[in-house]
Image 1: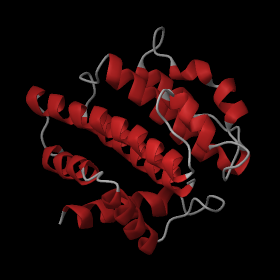
Image 2: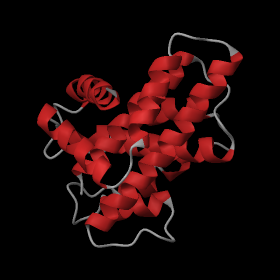
Image 3: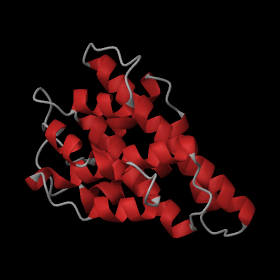
Image 4: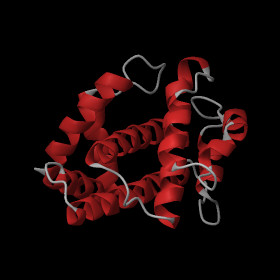
Length: 198
């Protein structure tokens, strides 16, 4: 049941956001089931847990449910890094000791489907929330047009980067349900992009 819910949600977002991207990023329903098989083979069942919990929480807006939703986003962002770890292992590389930015650079390099290394360096400052809030940084990232047809990939990965950092170090308690859903959408797309790049 949770897997079916996940596939339905991912299909909606993938059809909306990935269908017009260059290969290998568009995702068919069969590939979504392949993604779920891949997650299960690696024991990453928490992917389903996050979707189930967020559906359970989506129609509530009180302090307890906001805290629970925020915790799910933080967990989901960490899970996306775990997916990056598994992609690197699929490529015969050990992720231990690398930060998320280094992992992204290793996956999206000249050997991957698109080389985003220079773009990660160019927009590195947008992943820092010391002087600007996470919502402002996400809005700035959403306006990036660099990267040609791969600019949505760049935006999703930079967003993953900044959400994961903010969530792990400062938490996400100030966000309303609409922003939480948008972060889940972004993280979902980033997880698929990572998997497609393996």
